[in-house]
Image (tube, rainbow, N blue to C red; front, top):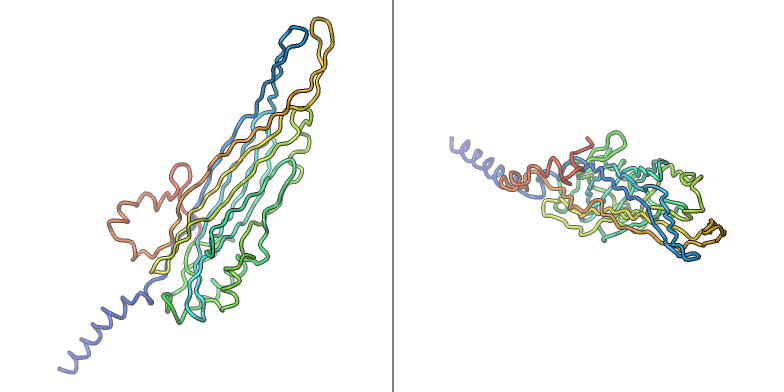
Amino acid sequence: MKIFKKFSFCILLFVIFGWTDPAYSDAPVGPAWVYNESSKVKLRKCFSEKFLGVRVKKCINPGSVGARVKGSASIVTFANANDGEVGAVLILQHDYRLDMFGQKATIGATCTFNSTKSSVIEFEIGHSLSTPPIPSISVVDILTAAVAARKKAAKGIMRGANPTAKKKGGKFSSGYAGALKNSTFKALLSEAASGCSLRYPDYKLFRGVPKVDLYKVGISFMVGATNWKFFRDGGASITLKMAMTPNAKLGGNKISFKVAGQRVRWKLPSYRFKKNISLISHELSLRTIKSLSREWRKKNSKKFGNPFGGKTGGVAGP
């Protein structure tokens, strides 16, 4: 009986202290966050000038320029098999759906950022297309292999934790991908792993736009990952920012017309239209469920279902 009691007491100590060891706690897990934001602006500029004592007004009104960005964001963490160090990447998979004066085109993009530093990527889609920095290392391919391998870390805060990240339908959930060998870990956190790869860009989008009234138009897009944070439970957070800037050069063309029976010529002044529009600015957080207190979960229950607020929200992925 004494032996049985002693044995039971040892099991109790293991349950209390062994299972609460943070190194063996559940790994962070969560769905991908979805976003769906859009904006449109109307291009219009009027010029006025006197000719032969008569004031003439000419307005350039080519139409509206806008875009919608729709996709998902995933935070994926991983550990270095050598020393247990934890790193993270943010994976954005979305479409830019452009609408230029009624002409529509969809340009897909996969953007990746890592936790070594805050990064901002800018590029323009328009009359002339500028490509963003393209990663020379495929983060998606590396993490796809890691998610399939499901290797546990033997060191660090993620020691013994089961990988939780999943990939389904070509997209990742948020979660822990497991342990990676040192060279792979460093590759994911290198500068070569950050950037955006465009998919199926439509270079003919602006073919047919009249060059008389409108000789340059486009939309500059900004996507950024700033303020990386890591938590003791192995989770991470990041502030995701997206913005668009429609810009155009109007005028500059020559027109002729009659005033008081006489033909006059007028070279319209040039005018640059530019408007910065913020689409998303929100902190995304990947944590273990156990690390969130009941009070915190109750207070932020709506944010879990709709992490961005407004039109953006919901969850995606496995």
